[in-house]
Length: 376
Image (cartoon, rainbow, N blue to C red; front, side):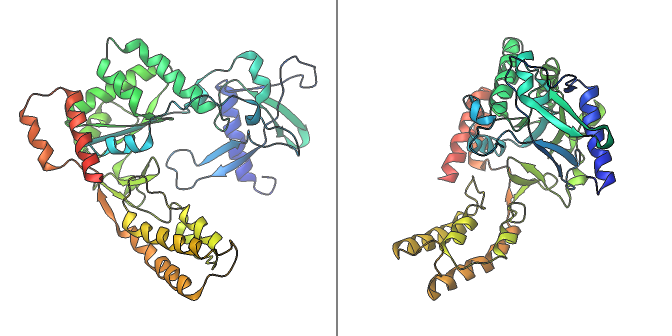
């Protein structure tokens, strides 16, 4: 940052914003003894030029430690996982005509820390000629292993207050939040708008702003615009599809895209090494929770099984016949980017049950049963 004055200026703006909002505070007497545990977090700047909102982020590393010492994360109880199963959530995402996405603005930073816990999230800022200053967080921050539990537990505790007044919306919020992302949907515009309006109100009462609303339905997007929702513009995703729980979604055409570049697989394959270790590392870069590319990846698994049966060492050169199969697999990998999978996967066969009067929960169960049958 000393070499890049523009970067340093943007960095200082983020910190000033944190100070103005009370997210952090300056420690005026950092060397005064305290009975509270103390830990200093290293941090660095991450730049994401493809982001439509926050291009510069300051990332704090609670897993960093000195040699033979504990990190902050080593000393914390992580808490239970309160997030829904990602496969269930993605199946639900594909089971409604109208998809609805939003996220909570600065979600972790909306939760206050107890005063005696603030000193474990101190950090240093080099102010050049003014020396090094010490700051600490007043809020929960991303990067600490207990933060996802604290966020999920806070949201669940808050929405329980509305279970009698808005039972359907509370049920959806309880099952469709993955960390700070809301992933849900409805089958008609009126229900979709009612859901989004009620969800925004409930979360707003907790001081959490649901923003970056996006849907595949133009009428719903228009209603959000008229009601001044903080929504995204579909046109922004013509060349940059929206990311949904690790998958890419073209909201205009309403199909899912399998991008090898977004997971770094194509760039990794260019480093081509003819070893078992490299093959396994390549396989680890394939993210396919719904099994869209299973016919392609199963060939790789069979190939790896064959290598294992031959008792090839991790860094030993692969035999010519194995290498030939791997080279063929790599050459075909780029074709996966041409896949366009319809997001809405409810079959015509199940739609016919709409003529019968089912409750909303019964309809959801029927749709999920059909989706599991299709996957099977």
